Each structure stands twice: as structure tokens, then as C-alpha cells.
Figure (spheres, rainbow, N blue to C red):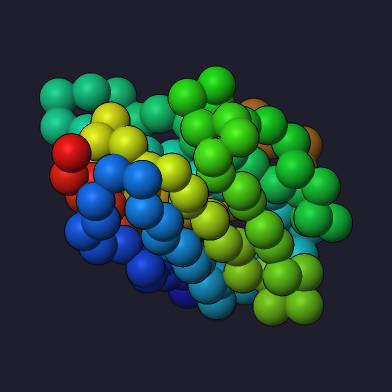
Length: 119
């Protein structure tokens, strides 16, 4: 079945960098928008960034603009999130998600990877 698998989370001090990866499998995601969301306990899942099927960045959340970069490998339909200058408020579970280009809601979600940033 369709599957998204995140990796690369962990612990980092403020100011450091982490790179998250998300691999896709089980179906053709070549026409899908891929995105990253994050969630902290007690809060709703928050949009971080997304990228089109051809690798064009669609948007960044204001809170990560200039610090995070989304990249897509169109050959493998993997997506990456390069996170620089990390802040304690970036601490969250990060989720990879996919949706068909014409749909507004994401249909497929990964299991999430924890990112913890210490002050």
C-alpha cells in the first residue's frame, strides 16, 4: 500500500541543523504535491512547507521562512527538509504528507519523526 516514511529526526542544540528525509512507496507519487507538517502536544498540526510534483516550492510557513528549505528528488519522489538555525520552538513531530495536485487536503501521511531542539 501507499507509504511515506520519514527519517532524520533527533536532538539538536539551538542554532544547529538537521535534514529530514521522506521516501515514498506503494504507488506513483510523481503527480502529487509533497509537504511537511509538524505538531506539538496539545496543538493542531501545523503546515511547514510544500513542493509541487516538478520541484517548485509552493510556500513556507512564516515561522520557518529563510531557515528551512524543501527539496524534491523527482526521480525517486523523495522529499527533504533542510532545517538550519534551529530554534527550541521548532521542537515537534514532523510529518511528511502527499496529496494529488487538484485536491486541497493531504491524503497520505507518514508516521512522523521527532525533532527536539534544546536552548
